[in-house]
Length: 109
Image 1 (tube, rainbow, N blue to C red):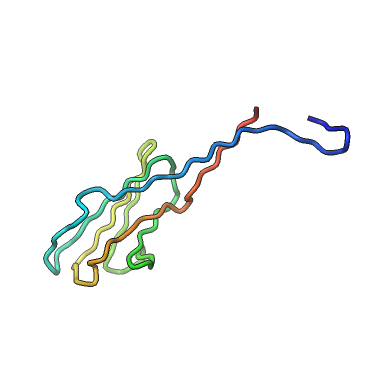
Image 2 (image 1 turned 180 degrees about the horizontal axis):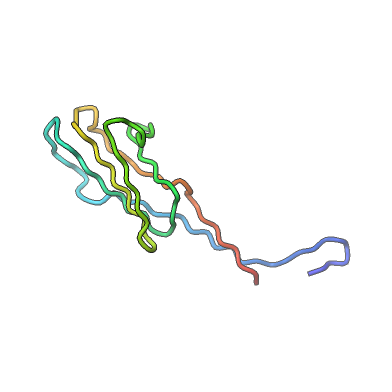
């Protein structure tokens, strides 16, 4: 829409979707030291290009004892964290964070 003042304006609808991440399985795992731990995170309402896993507020995606596999299946993203040779240092709860915490879609009115 032209306003007559040299300024062009246009109305849009803004839709913001925030991905929801959840680690599947029980809240507490009992694993013998030296065994392998596998955790799966499911992210809905967004397709992040990367998923970051954190342990004690430090990203662990590139730790040599860990492997991360991420797959997009339709509207869901699955990320699998595998920890080999589990130790007492792995006891705290890991968290996952999508690389794009908010997706924005704009449409013209």
